Length: 414
Ligand SMILES: *Cc1c(COP(=O)(O)O)cnc(C)c1O
Image (cartoon, rainbow, N blue to C red; front, side):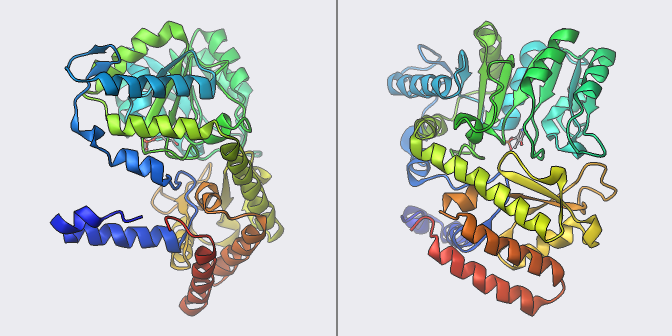
């Protein structure tokens, strides 16, 4: 597939950078847990003529003429999202996971209202009330964390905090929590304190769609997600909700926080939801999980401190303090070897967010290129070797050669 034939004619500078980035995506093991490879059909929709037109409003209630086909595309995306997740209502217009959360808050909260979310440093997301994000600036945010021994969510503690601070919305979901979240328990806590429940499954959505990670849809008032992480679609967002919240959600998205929807991306989301209903997608998600579990086990065997002792999803977290390596140094060395991960704070981290004591490793993207257990064991060996030879450039470059060979055997975007 030629991604830049037209761009080359008008802007060789950008075309060249896209080509270099394509090569980077082909020749490295992309193991950032929030990343994936959208397939060619999805890329084609995102690059389509649907970018040309305004379609403010919703199907059948637009503010512009000429939206006949846009209406149909958005209706299809909505129907598929509802079917895929078993939800009563879907809004497919949010442009990102952050905007999806922003819209949910706007739908029910007034400035200054209390919300309760997972602490960023415990694995939560910026939009769950961090003071650096609008969620923590506009609303009064309180936080729950994880247990210092088990690194698991302590639901009794969550309940006690909720009773104390009486949040209007409780947020569950995380960016760096490797275990199953008990959505039913969160709903019980929310009910007990009269709060609404927002489950943010940005990371887990693909696994949820495939039925291998418990779904919050039966419990939560709102479910938000990105569509580009495990779900493997275009870079975007989605809100699912119970029918009773549909009007408020829709007007919070438009005109609340957005103008014209990105209809080319909505078309790509429709395609993504169709693909996510296939048997092939289920098999893929199962392999994502198997690969993550295999990687966790292999690294534990090598003596690494894999938090919670494993994973129930697509990601693992490693605390590198026992190895005397910072997350930053580990991530930089691994990247030199062609294994791209991100530094990540571990719960109760003493390092700054720019240094951190851990790394987060995910399997969605490498699984999309066909990698299975056998190769995962090799990758675990390589990760271990690099972390043990973090200052030895020539040893790291040997691993990079092996990584490149492996990537050639499992090509992407041929
Ligand atoms: C990634 C993520 C988001 C934000 O998604 P963007 O599309 O980057 O705005 C929101 N919540 C959680 C839990 C995430 O992991």
